[in-house]
Amino acid sequence: MSEQSPRVQILERLLAVVGAEGARAALAKSHDALSNVELAALGHTWEGYWARPEQCAPAGSWLVWLLLTGRGWGKTASAASAIVSMVERGEVRCIGMAAQNDDKTYDVNVLGLIEASPPGFVPEWIDGESKLVWPNGAVAYAYSPEAPGAIRSKNLDLSWLSEFQSWPVATREEAYLNFSFATRKGGARMIIDATPKRGHPLLVRLLRLAAEEPEAYRVTRGSMRANYAHLAPAAVAKLRKEFDGTTAGREELDGEMLTDDEAATVSMAVIEASRAPLPALRRRLVSVDPAVTARKGSDTTGIIDAGLGADGRAYLIADYSGKHRPEAWASLVIDLYLGGRCDCIVVETNKGGDLLTRNLRAEAGPRGLSVVVLAKGAQWMPHNPRVVYVREVHARGEKSERARPLTTAYERGRCRHVRDAGLAGIEQTLTTWVPGPHATSPGDLDAWVHAAVELLGLTASSAPRETVAENLTDEVTPWAL
Image 1: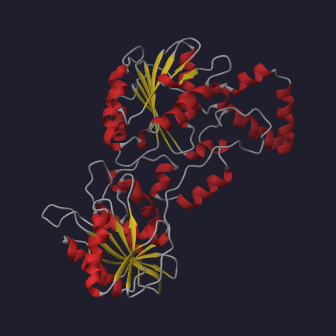
Image 2 (image 1 turned 90 degrees about the horizontal axis):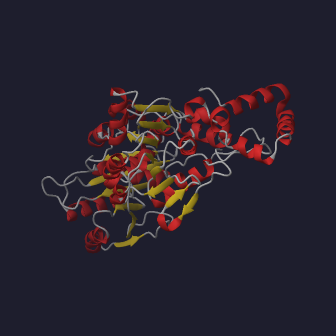
């Protein structure tokens, strides 16, 4: 555990000596002796009171400060407080800032700087010009990495790039380069905050530069655990129970930057431990990620036969992925649907849209079968030998994010491979595919992800909300919590 802030150390000593009620009374008495101005000043005393040592800006003439930590560590408060201090001292006059998009830039950067500014020095937000202006004339301009061209218009002496791991893939490189070129006045400093993300090329590049020039590129690492005093205990306990020991937990909670070997979707050791005979099934389905064509060099059509066991686990029963013509995969999928008494066919519609379901209808019609598309969010229907139920899904976001819940499900023992089922192909994909901006599209993996999501109801986790700790809610509560 890292060293706690002076404020938390005071609270811990009070709690140890006089308990919660005594601590509350002591704090109330000490605060009653302060004027409103003094209380407001205390609420914005970041260094030396609220901040842990590692949350303070590095000393020296650094160029980049990379806050690469787990969620809930306090990155936004650290960056915003450091910038406001520089503005107050007159060290920076022209600032550029951005998060994932316009809305996030306002919610994170703009509001973060407003809240970090002490009374009497609060900046004014000028909406029509997307800028903050402090009383001393310093200005912070809000940008979005979705519109990188606009970033070229200013000469900046500091840039704050927030939630860097989640910038849009298509424009993040250009946006980062434009911020780098624009930040050329005064100390020409950058503050970048991010949660580690395996295979992220810009984070990997920054860490490499930090290893080569540690004085110019300062890196602060940290875990959610470091900020326990400012997080809801129940939320932290829930996240730890669900994700401790998983790759998602190591990245999102502990702030680890995983290597390429660790970044594969599933390890072979986990797969070997998952092998089991096929049990009685509650549900069975076929999942398809269709390729556009079956020509040489085209993607593989992923076709996965999967089921939900009576034990509540998802079972990978068979893998029929390969180079299939549209009519061939449709015929095969309907055969599997009927032969396995499945309750639905899950089809990814990203590449073919409505044509994919029409393809199934074209094959089902001559057999006397009707095809029914389940409404979004509708409950699955029991197997009907005369009706083919179809669940259409449209995959959104990066493949690394879509596959993350599957990785966690494996690590939590919620996925099983049917023993002796001949799953070498999908297992090769699972143990070797590493997400990244130029990673090829593995159809078998996508089909298995969609099947597991349908069977297990997998969803991405959310970050814990930060709240006042220790139930001492009548004490001075700063913006930083």
